[in-house]
Image 1 (tube, rainbow, N blue to C red):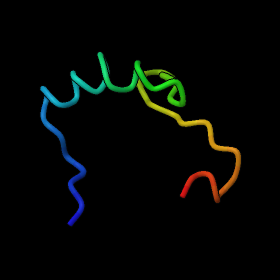
Image 2: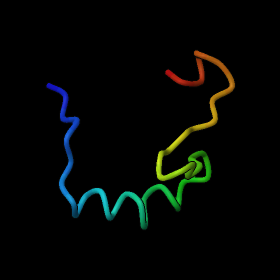
Image 3: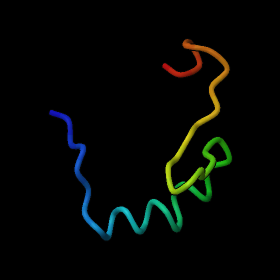
Length: 43
């Protein structure tokens, strides 16, 4: 199954800690983008 909905606590943790520590993620207008060179790198 896919769990697409997250709670407020998980969302706060992702925005404040998890994504900020990952250098491959950029915060763009409160949406997260990941720089990927090609399709193979994405998978």
